[in-house]
Image 1: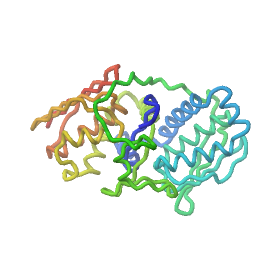
Image 2: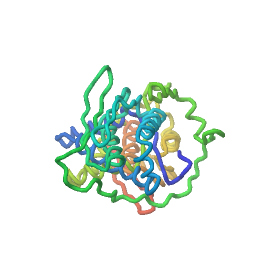
Image 3: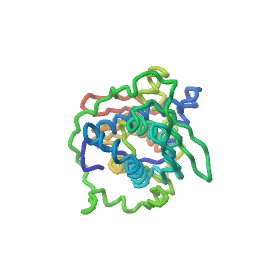
Length: 321
């Protein structure tokens, strides 16, 4: 969904992000916001470090600090991340952002920490306070952190495979024409699905994977299964059977529109579903979506096995309990 095919974004429900993290926290029975923030910080810093390296980054930090903050908040509104405004800034001391309709408080806290790392060259701590129906996010130097600013992301995107799904595209912006059906309100920083009233957001799947890796590093090797279960719970609680229609066709549209992968094969039986998804991203969420919709369609519980290939292909097998 970008002009650069290697710079992916996914289109997802904002409430789905929060419910996913809430489900994970309920399953692991410990607070996880600080882990989410740290994982997102690493992802955000890595993005800015790569996108604005060398002379370009030096010029921004020297001559365009406030302009950079303004551009980043305006871009956030376009992506459905919320209405974000620079409230105050003092070089090397703090950045204050006021936000309404924020897509995810812990994820945006991580975004701001990564921006502070990149712009100020300092470790950051982010505090969030409710104010006037929104939030004040304050990033400032974290004197307690002595380690390096960033642990470079360990994940590497697999080679992109050609797709076979064709969506009509706008001749001006090149985005799928179907996105015009959504209500884009830049002033409020929201994208609404008029059919369901759900708010949507465009987020980077590599950032979500960065959060998942941080959770696994902190909480152990069972976290991938926990994430899968958390996503299954979200799908079965937030969607209903009436939205689906014919499951195979619905899944093709669901993944294609959201930029989450190309469903190249799906075999649905009364007691099972087998699927192959090329370019699956993030793969754990894709597997959880498949399991959740299978359960909505079948009306019963299930078990899920998945295999992630090095070429970005995800194979999923779901069996009815």
